[in-house]
Image (cartoon, rainbow, N blue to C red; front, top):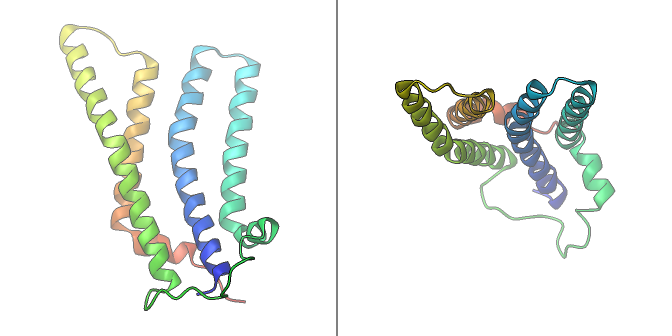
Length: 166
């Protein structure tokens, strides 16, 4: 594997993680902010943040080779190739996808469980949860589901992220 291929793989894996983390952390926060104050400025801020997140995702996933060229990430090394033994690029993508799924699951499971317990306690006392708490609970639940799906379907995701040889 060349250094260029390695950096392209790293950018694609980082792009996938940043998309999932941003869409299911930043977007629910923006939606709760929009619900609290429904005005044109809030709508514009939310739209701009979504466009930026999707733009960065598209750049990192679909134009990773151009980012490597722009930042000159593959230059300045003594050797052109990285010797990883029998590990090829498909296996690196599978490992990265598995790790991302694990991070999503481990990062959001405690908050989801505590929000669930608080909601249960509040319903027993007769208190009502506000929209922001419900949004946080839902976003953490979606992150857990995506983390689980990445853990169990890492091979399918790796095939979708695989670089095509020219």
